[in-house]
Each structure stands twice: as structure tokens, then as C-alpha cells.
Image (cartoon, rainbow, N blue to C red; front, side, top):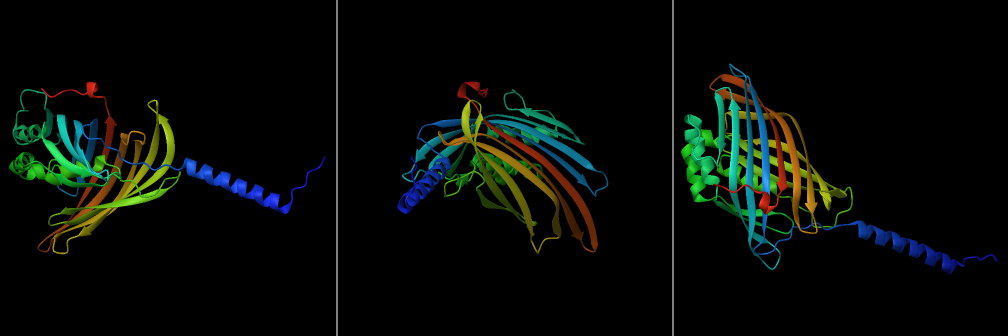
Length: 317
């Protein structure tokens, strides 16, 4: 027996296929959000390494800074819109700096600070970080605000003078940046594989200008990792320098490359792991009177953040 679809039946079949396709599309979309509960805590290990090379001065200089930080986010409160008031505390800091003037190695679990000028300057600052709470707020989309560096740390930074301010994270802005870089800003809308969005941040550099960072994210879909189904989100960053017209230093970015990867646990509502790398080369044109000098600086950095169990953390002595 031969069955012929009438026009109305053909339309019904077409509508059914469209509905099935629409439902499949909706099912594959996700809406990742940070989720917080008052009283819970997240414990992470942060590994950072930065290699800096400077040329254009009488002697080329290369230095390497490596550090491992054990830290915890504690949820103090959550408002009706899901924005959390968080306190970050550091339980242990391990830092090693290698430069032409020598090596510096610090472990907050050690009873004494390293000997020498660097130990006398940086030791007290690094030790001031341990057990001190940094307060900030985070929305369900991961927008971080109201970062407060404790006065104890601010005073320790001031005492380090140029050494502390010039050592990247060993500054008030550096501390704030460390917290911001641990976050992940999510879009308003649902995500399908390949969806892109971006966020922008600016850092003021006194007497130099404003450094702008535009982060572009791309959703790669769910991926099995560590016996979990996690949302993979890739990141690239573009850096733009807006020089201060009153400054005698002009900065030009010659090369830049960055890539990053986040694994977000949407069921629990937090980052499970992230890995970011950046390579940037800049030229500083310094003018003093009628004399101009070009100094080239290259920075290659990697940052790895991993969630750990509370029992795996090494407590501070």
C-alpha cells in the first residue's frame, strides 16, 4: 500500500523537524554562572613564573621569578542577586627570584627570612601576606569589584620602596590584579560552542600611561577532565598602551601573544583549573633633555590555578 502525504501533513512534518532541531539547540546551550553559598570555602594553589629580559642598557639583564601561593576564598555573605562578599586569605607563599645580582628564595613556612638586602626588604612583605584577608565582591557573572588590600600589607609595601613597587605583584595594584586574574567574566546570554565574548580592564601606570587589556573568550563546549564534565573556555588577550602625553617615557608594544584555558565546573559554580600564558615585548623610548635612549623589555609569563581539597593544602606554621 502506498501512502501519499497531503500538503497539511507535509507542513506538519516540516514543523516537527524544526521543533526537534530547536530543542536540540536549546539542550546544547549552557548558562555558566558562579554560585556561592554563605560559609563555604574554595582552596586553590596558584603557580606563577615570569621571565624578564631587558636590552638597550650597558648590560643585558635577565631575571626569573617563580612563586607558589596557597590561598583560600571564603564566602562571607551572598545577597539576593547572588553577589558574594568574599575574603581571600593566603596560607603559604614560596618565592624564588634569580637575577644578575644573585638569587632570593623565600618560604613563609621557614622560621627565618633569607639573609641579605633582598631578604630584609621582601621577607617582611611576603610574610605580611600570610593569614591576612583581602576582601572583594563577585557577581554570578564573575565581575570582581570592591577589592580591598589590608592596611597591614599596604604599609609593608611602602616600606619596600622602589623594590616592592617594581616587582610586579609586590605592589597594591599587583595584589588587586592577582585577585582579578583568578576570576572569569561570563556573558549574559546562554553559550553554544564557538560563542565569543570579551571584557576589558585598565591599569594606570603613574608617569607612564594607561595599560588596557581586552580579553576575548570562546566557549569550546563540555570536556571530561578529572572525572568531571567541565565547561572549557579559551582566552586570548590584547594589550594596548595609552601613553601619558606629559611623560618623558614612550612605550611601544612590538610583539604580543597570549593564550589561556579555563575549566569551569558549572554544576558547582566555580573554576576547577585555569592555565594562562603571555609573551609580550615592549620598547621604552626614554628622553632626558636632548638625549633619547631605547630600552627593550620582554616578559614571558605563565599562571596556573588549580582547585585542591582542603586536606591537600599545606598549613602555615
